[in-house]
Length: 488
Ligand code: BG6
Image (tube, rainbow, N blue to C red; front, top):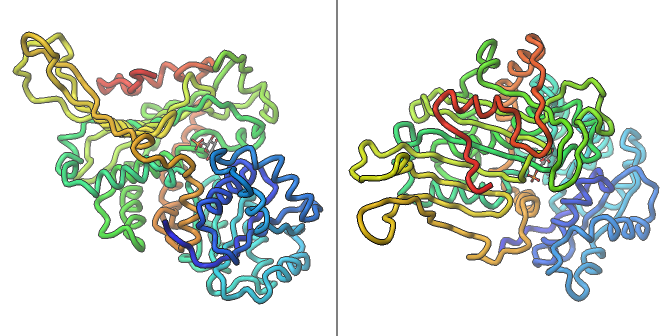
């Protein structure tokens, strides 16, 4: 197991929802796995005027229920609490950062990890105030959560603010999808096996589908979500990052900038979607009243914090294409939505059909090979191949070669944030976005948004608890394909 060097982790937004649901539970897991150096501290920073004791009660109430229960043995929670401190700071008040200075005094030799789990409007003021109070040491790193802007311009402004105080090599832009085990396994599958490389290209792969369907609606984030929408919230980051991992050329190494350089090339090679192409290759949807998991879901526009006449999309499907030798002509279909029928996140690689069938089979047989990398509801990788049906004759049937990683390795308590936090602690930037990747992703997304606005493209309604608007099936059907929904 990797052992990080001693650090101080300063978590801004320390009482926030993400801190309680994901970050503190992930830190607890790291601590319980014995990867937290003894002298390392976690300093949570927020505005609320808690004493340390009151904050620990708050954490017990809001975060403890989210940790891996099998790790909650004996005194593991109490031992984790020993490393936690709390400082109440008004983030806009330069002087109040001195309280943080007191906590960090004499600890300059440790890696200093600032984690900003706050709105992006606070990134600038926090960096400036850390700078003014001389709290940024040469071995400091800063991790920031999305949303990193709402377009290329605002993303550049955020970046400019951070880069006044931190070098690019000190900035860790988090996309938690890159911390997911199956996404990392896709890298292992592609570059740890000679088998796939000759097949990983046009002529061999017919189409690629990336789906992130959620059953959750906007869950108390109505106000934020209504300003954001599915394209900015999911496609610009998580789905494009997965597309990059599928499509990138083999990096020379996992270390340094290898992976980031290759991902950038993919983003730059995305065929721009503009004007009429946006109309024919994207689908916007918004959920209306329906039933998800036997529960009534109201119209999106009736959700708390959402404008009653909102035209924000809660669903997007689109066809992306990559203009390079490897991928020219291969469609990458991306879709994501809220309040959908099933929670499912998966990457599906559909291979080409055999050129000529020698078997006497039912129509539709043999079916093309398919590789499915599934993140939700369970983690695993399946390769569907054709095999002979037992018995007389040569009749074929698809069977799955199943790599059920959760059963093979009893990892239990490892999650995406945990992996990325350990990378942050160890200074491994490979799976964090570089500023030019972010810039290139926005450069591709911006014209889609502006065309939707200019041409008044309103979202099509879909009842909550379904697979999204019918136009989404039509998008792939036009190319002769259908979405992979088998077994869902
Ligand atoms: C976040 C989005 O980045 O990812 C949320 O802001 C979304 O809207 C979430 O629900 C999905 O993450 P996961 O890991 O639950 O698939």
